Length: 203
Length: 203
DNA sequence: CTTGTTCCATAACGGTCGGTATATAATGTG
DNA sequence: CACATTATATACCGACCGTTATGGAACAAG
Image 1 (cartoon, rainbow over the protein chains, first blue to last red):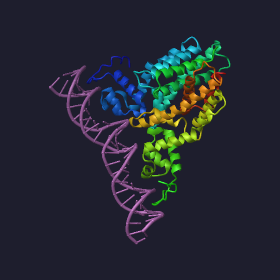
Image 2: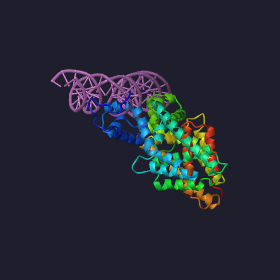
Image 3: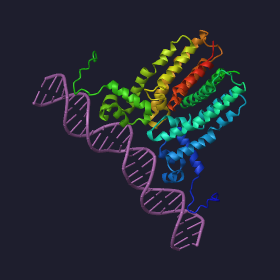
Image 4: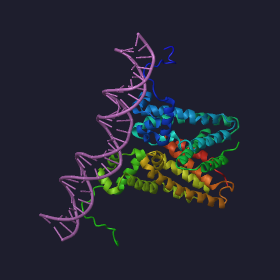
């Protein structure tokens, strides 16, 4: 109970890197969604066999939750950075441009992993959907608070509804990921964001 | 080749209504997406057996395309009606409020059937995705033309990009369907639309 | 009646799904 | 060395997938 840091490995050491395997799994889930990613897809991409996967991660669902953790930490950190922008307008622009980088880039799969995995609702994937919805709600709440602060600071006109504005921004975000997944070019997405910013309320 | 209208049924008459069965299939695809809807789900909802389904509709993919036809005709006709609104603002508002009615109602499944079926991309469902994307692009083009006309009529400020504005409106639309599918209440969706309309460019 | 045609019902096809039992290989400990 | 422990590899499980073959039931035409 005191020190389990070193963990003193006793048996045969594993021949793969757990973090690297998880990153590969993330890529598969991102490209195919939870239901669309088969265990064969996952094990092949991770370079391990099924028993190794089950021993290291539990099962497919647990693997997904861990991949989603990694996804949030690595790919959605721009959302936290956005909140620290000085003005509400810059928060929104940071959010939207960040979405283009992450969901419309060329290295990673197009679209949003959470959205892809939560929209297609196989009956057994309800917990997946619930997890995504819960995470989305919590980050949305931070955005509402940020916009309410902006209103207090005179950064947003008083007649604008902070919660409504957050929903709008999230809708734009979701639209960006959807259109990116449908094959929109980066130029088209930037055009979307440019136009969105011309509509953004001025103080 | 002249008259095949009556079709002179020769063998045993079918015991179910094709249109009604298609409507039931639409409901299943809408709720579960293309991949998520199994043949068993479909046949049970349609009240027919698998051979009957295959005889009447071909296969699962053909059934989906026909269901998507019906979906567009019955549920997405508000999109065509929106184009006939007198001002660009009213076009947009008609579009967004119509989306709430269709995708956030209580009688039908929440969310957009096309989006649900096209985002989760099993390898064999590529033609499904292509169909949805193609239909979306064609209806989006009509909207661009409508907004360009609005610009010519002075209905939208000259500095606003019609294509960008269309992408924004579509993003809002997609966001509405996503949030509806995630459990947003009708009040929340209306708040989203209300705020969107306060941002809409004034002439 | 028979014949031809079309539909319905059952049952099965090969294939894939997520998950696992079994046996073996590789390590630390005695 | 033996032994416990852990990881790997193979092969397999039952369940479900989309699809279809088979056999009988219901109709029109001859």
